[in-house]
Image (cartoon, rainbow, N blue to C red; front, side, top):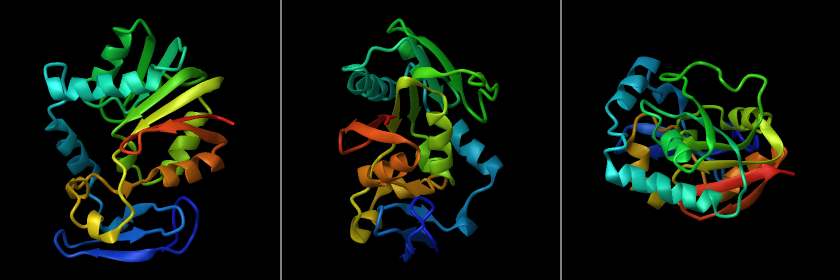
Length: 211
């Protein structure tokens, strides 16, 4: 199986606990699920419907505020697109509270294509990229909606790039999580989309800007 990011041959990674097969690229460090184990769109949405993602969930709000603190500490932005806002647009609301103009899109919950013919200073996408079959295509799409000095800020939990750790990792257990990254994976993907890494926290947040 070729890597969806760098087109390098990958190694099969068998998960006997979950009875699934993943593929691991040793070049860009992408790990992705074999397509035959994907859940249906109906089951995917059902999984999201049961997430407790609201402004009343203090832990969820703190995670997003920490994300925004890390993202915005060195940026001066006016317009923001939150891509993949989920059932309730919590991040969009927190951005509005910081006096930013925000629009949001989600393929299930906010399907209106508000981004058409627009460009943004900042595009956020939190806990989205691990659900994507074609992350490089989506990243390139987002890059095309950035202003010349714009930034894309992604949140997705990074793996350690070892088979042993991955096979014990809770993050892989979510049936809708099909693609897993390290900062190196995203940097490789970014270069092909005309982007460069500004910074990352080596855990789950990475900022990209146009080259």
